[in-house]
Amino acid sequence: MTDNPYIISWNTTKRCNLACSHCYLDSAEMNGASDMSTEQCMKVMDELASFAPGAMLVLTGGEPLLRPDIFSIIRYSRKKGFTPVLGTNATLIDSEVAKELKHSGISGVGISLDSLRGEPHDKIRGVEGSYTTTMNGIEAIKKAGIPFHTQFSITEDNLYEIEGFTRFSRDLGARAVNFFFLVCTGRGQEDTALKPALYEEALQKIVRASNYYKNEIMVRARCAPHIIRYADDSTFDGFNDFSVTSGCIAAKGYLRVDPNGSVTPCPYIAPHDDTPNILNTTLFNIWNTDKAFTDIREGKLEGECGECDFSESCGGCRARSFIKNGTFLGDDPWCEYMSESEIKNRSGNENNKVVISKSAPAKIINITWSTEAEERLKNVPVFVRPLVKKGLERYAKAQGVREITPEMMQKLRSRAKH
Image 1 (cartoon, rainbow, N blue to C red):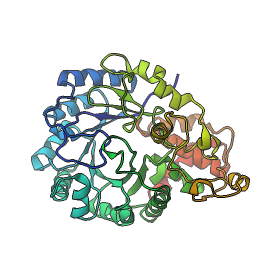
Image 2 (image 1 turned 90 degrees about the horizontal axis):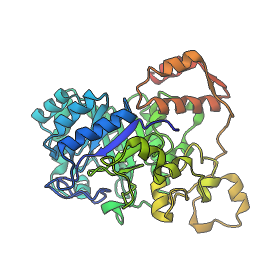
Image 3 (image 1 turned 180 degrees about the vertical axis):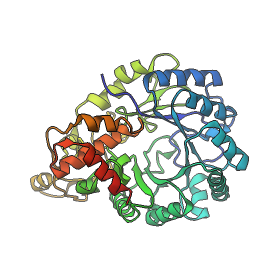
Image 4 (image 1 turned 60 degrees about the horizontal axis):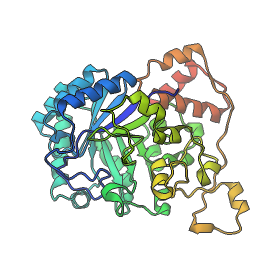
């Protein structure tokens, strides 16, 4: 038996008013033909709540605000004990929509914005003028007093904006900026692949931005578990910027429900004929018996990921492995890391890999928690508790500390605030 999911991403619709070149869902329809009914949505939330109580429920699309019943869905999710957040392009948000979102009980809003300037954003999103309407939506969200964060999809054309966009998001009043590394699936099969060297460059830019704006805005990499390699474990803690930037959590604490109820370990893993559907079976059964979930969670990594110093803390992207290798357990084609021992064992730099060497992460076999620390951890919201726990244990390993105590937790929390 494993821990239950604590973050659930739900593509509530394939309807969308934009035409993003990188869309993993290939959203385009406007009639909602693929959507579940309101009654089915309530049934899904009943099932999710029975297995993942208190989870964060990310309501996304397509564009979720194109569902006429989205406010009812938000209200019901709140009733079932979830922490609901909305993933949106914000182009449909005006003052009335923002007020209704707040009244419905939304906890926060993630807003897609892919450039500091209108023209590049509109090009990526496929609709002229979408930058302006998104910015108007952000202003409406701010006036309604709803917490928000920005979501920036990295491409070869905009990765140079990472530092500037972090500052821009801070000045907008965002709580966080999430930098998404795309996976070649859906409409993005040919359009989203960064060259590995550029991927590494982007990771370094994000780490620098996070360090520079450490006390002003959270800076997080999404679908980029490799960022663990660039982080200094001695400065990590469970409450700081990187506390929610971790190795891949697909099938371990995270899953996706698509518009018709198919359940996969993450949004970048497309449903197939044998993919289970939450309308036909229980989430308990899916989580514990579906091969995609059990392979990712319990299988032994193969290839370079299996031999890597960071196989445990990073683990690579399992969706990229599946796309390249046809297995969830293969190597991640975007990763450029070579350990010192691997460098010594190679006669040349094979496959044009960029040599990135770093000593293996420090390891202590057993990290224990005092009873008081375990009780204090229970006060952390369910949807971030496992990540906070992992961050604290990573810090303890780097410091050579074998037991986590309330005093350590308080020290690190105080440091994160300053």
